[in-house]
Amino acid sequence: MSPSAALHLTIATRESRLALWQAEHVKALLEGLGHSVTLLGMTTQGDQILDRSLSKVGGKGLFVKELELALEEGRADLAVHSLKDVPMDLPPGFDLACVMEREDPRDAWVSPHAAGLDDLPPQAVVGTSSLRRLVLLRDALNAMGRQDVRIEPLRGNLDTRLRKLDEGQYHAIVLAAAGLKRLGLSSRIRHIFSAEASLPAAGQGALGIEIRTGRGDVAQALAPLVHMPSWLRVAAERTVSRAMGGSCSMPLAAYANWQADGALRLDAAWGDPDAASAMVRVHQSAPVQTLAQAEALGLTVASALRAGGARGV
Image (cartoon, rainbow, N blue to C red):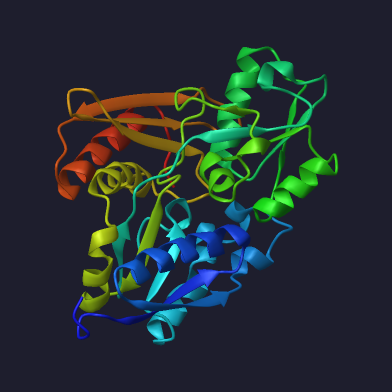
C-alpha cells in the first residue's frame, strides 16, 4: 500500500467484552491492510439501563447513538456494531459501509440443568432479552404442553447474563451463538437450535461497520472486508423488519440463506407477544445478485407476513 493510501483510523466501540472483541477484530484486519488504527471505547445508554427491557426504553438504537455522535463530531471514523443492534433506518448522514462475513447466526441454549427444552424441570425459568425468542420459545413450549415453564427477562452484557444463570436466577438462558463463539465460550453451549427451530433475528451473527456519509476514503479502506454473500442475506432480512416497522419491540424473526440452486430463501416469523393469535410463518425464494433484489425479496416476505395476520408497528 502506498503511504498516501494508508489511513489513520479511529474505531468507536462499546466497552463490553464482546464489543471490544469485535472492534479489535476489525482493527487487526485493517492493520493487516496497512492502516493504523486506534479504539475509542464508549459506554452507551443501552449499556447503562439494565432494569428495563429494551423494547420499553427506546430499542437497540440505544447501543449506537453515542457511537454515531463520535462519528459526527469527528472523534471516530467508523463504528463496529453487531448488525442486529443497528436500527433498520440509519439517521441522515450515516451509511452502512461494510457487512463482514457472517458468524453462526443461530440461537444457543445455555444451561447447567437441562440439555434442552424437553429436559427442563417443572416450573423452570428460562431467560431471554428478546421478544423474538420469547414468542418462539413460548410457541415451542406450548406445543410440548409445558405451560408451567416461565420465560423471564434477561438484560446485561454477555458476561452478566452468564453470571445470572450461574447464580441460579434461571434454569437456562438463550443467547446468540456468535457471541459465545467469538469470546471462546463455546463450552457453555449445551445445544444450538436449528434455524428452523428458532428462527434467527435479522442480521444476527453479522458485523456491520457504520461511517459518516461522504467518507469515501474510509469506505475504500473497508472495501476488502466486505462479504457480499452475507450482505445480501442480511439486507433481505433487515428489509422485512424495516417494512414491518421493526425494532426490538417487535416479535419478529427473519433469516435468509443460500439454496443449492443459487437462489436466496428468506424465512420470517411473527408472534403475538400477548399470545392472542397464532404464530405467522412465511418463506419465499428468489434469485438475488444485488442489494436491490435482496430488498425486493424482503418486501415480498413482509407483505406475506401481513397477509397472514402479522401486525407491524
